Image (cartoon, rainbow, N blue to C red):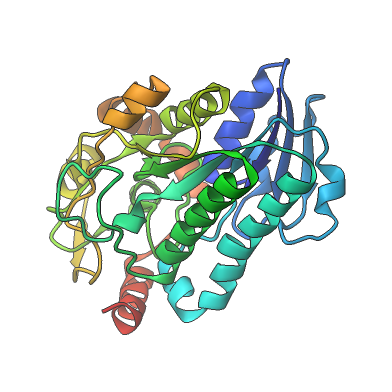
Length: 329
């Protein structure tokens, strides 16, 4: 099978690409403009014979010439921070929506019929019901969430009009090795581990009672691969989460840092993310296999490597939190 992976140098994209490349029967093209991805994430397999890396942008008009005879597109390329999306929404729209549209046009031109999209559970905003299923009200609270959702809608519309086979996986709080340690939103694991490794106070935004549906990256990778191989699903939106929310306080307690700093809660953040994964089990035959305890243990075992990661100090997080209050109300 010949795959195209967009965002192949990112956190999830690199793990997905690596898993695909390990199967010698697969041919994989990886695309990344390295605006947020890291070339180091693919250094272990960049020279494999069944992998080709293209450093380019999805808005590149000449890209279609390089993407012949692809069987399935795995679309993970996106910008994913909240504050920059609020202060510069046009850039996010171009990266997350226009680039997706260009990708769909390439698919149409080259007769590529299948796409699996990495959507975001942030489209649910502040859910009114838990566990949250795929029919829950859409409540995008900032341009990042909006652009990811509009890209999803665009994919589904193109699928209907141009007879594509599309699956959108709404991902919940993915963590694991290579997770980012910087950014205004999201990678709480990476931030905490970098702080812990460098003996800085672990910074909790809010009271720490908020819960998150942490999903280990290898489980997410398996969901993408299962979706790519299923032949009888089309135009499906599917939650991918662990289905067992963990409080931030509980996470930090297990990590056992020397010092904890609490900062004001940020407006617009849900008290809990909690995925209903009934649909994933039924349609994909998927379920999470890595427990929270096991996933955390894997990351803690490699704590020395986090000393090399970009570090968010308490002062930097305070500044980011002030920016958040400025833009998100």
